[in-house]
Length: 230
Image 1 (cartoon, rainbow, N blue to C red):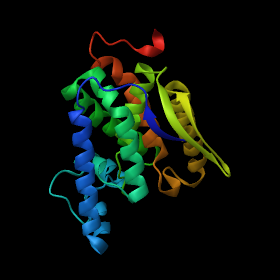
Image 2 (image 1 turned 90 degrees about the vertical axis):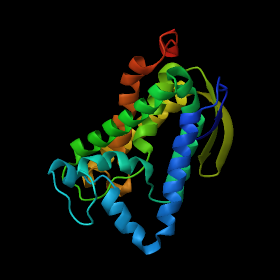
Image 3 (image 1 turned 90 degrees about the horizontal axis):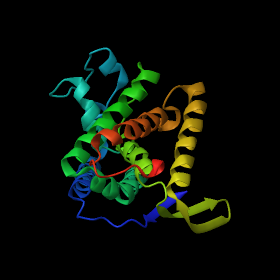
Image 4 (image 1 turned 30 degrees about the vertical axis):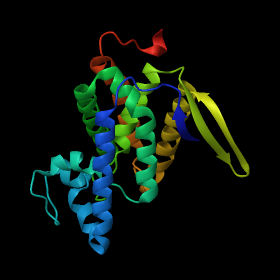
């Protein structure tokens, strides 16, 4: 299921959401420009669980403590589909969560969700030497917050299953509940071959989602109510 658009307009211009989109886009274009050297860039600035859990920095080195790669990795992507998919989800759901929190608090919330996502991945696979990159963990936090804030929002969704292709409007609660269910199923299956098996850090998605669900009550504006409980 691919979300295309929700039915909740922004009450103000989403400067932070757009800013994050622009930064991710610039970093992705820079990665592409590196050509064959992009792999070294990812190895240096991606979050490698072994380096962080063992307080090590294996070449290529970074000019700051390795634990800070938790944050640099949030703005890097492994390919065009990875990048476009993440930016689509951020564009659809980020503006409304930004509305509910305010700009500065949304930025802090986003970064914290990304950090918790990385920690969840490392907790499952602390000795992995594979760099973890992508905005997926932080955006998963945005999805968790959106589900609690706007569960009844209608999301225009593309559903594909072999030859079955339909565009339908689904309640956000249904769409995002299905999304996190898929992450759980995929994460559980991946454990047979190691966390993040297949190139996807499923437990980062899970950790980010539940971080978002927990943090939304702290970061939302006082006048904003959680739609799931009203």
